[in-house]
Image (cartoon, rainbow, N blue to C red; front, side, top):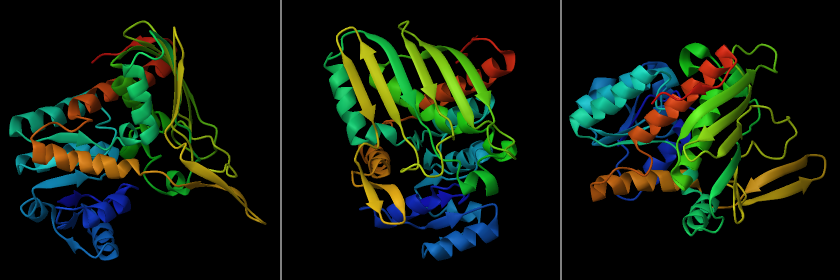
Amino acid sequence: MGLLSTAHVHTGGFASRLAAAEGVEFVGVTDDDAARGREAAAEHETTFYEPAALVEHVDAAIVSSTNTTHRRWVELAADAGLDVLCEKPLATTMADARAIVDACEAAGVRLGLCMPLPFSVPARRAKAAFDAGEIGELRVAVGTNRAWLRDRHLTGWSADPEHAGGGAAMDHTVHIVNLVRWITGEEVVEVSAELSTMHDGLAVEDVTVLSMELSDGSVFTLDGSWDRPDDWDYWGDATLNLIGTEGEIALDCFDQTLKRTREGEGVDGVYWGSIPDDGLLRDFLDAIEDDRPPLVSGEDGLRETAVVLAVYESDERGEPVAVEY
């Protein structure tokens, strides 16, 4: 396997996982920014290749690029017959999302998304409880995916509309929408969004408040803001409360965390649980070995892209909009 682009903040994590994964040879990386690619290759003690050369040396690849270049990298991989695990969101336009899915279907290769939350232990327990009917019929879903505004937002590309396609709504909406879709089997049919920018100097939104309707008529709200204060004890959260006619499931994907207090240094969070990204990569590898789709597929990515685009349309129009899949 190899890494197509090293632009994404998760590049280092996946490079380390590929190097350590059983049954995987981590061949190398490529990038359209050769200096950045060579630096990443040196850091992870692997080889830098030109794009056309790397795809000739691997069987599968992870696309770890900027959001707006996913299509170019996935199409390169699909044309070479590679199975692809792509960073989220799948794309920043429906045309690109559909083209990505179509390219992989035409080439007969697997397409998975880097969506780790379904591999969290609390999420697995929540789905088992929901599937067992423990809360009866769903009525309300309340989600959060809040985070610090980090240095990478201010100095990197993740808050640059040209490369990210948007701000917090583009970055965070897909995670909890994917979790709701996976656990409940329902789709988002309508979105009402309010977006705003709290921090000076940002060209994108950092506050997002979404009110949605699911296909069973239940209500789904989501706060996906980059609004955690600097002294917050952990980088952010990913939570979901599912309220039904018979009970409630309260899910915190990063609940396996201790709070640590140190003299003069305040309080911080120490995560001790299983790593969802490990499960994500293992599922992709198993999908290749077992000849099946990954748990989070290209079609999932396409549908979640449609929800994000409805978010921006709703905010621009100032009214609820139907999600156009």
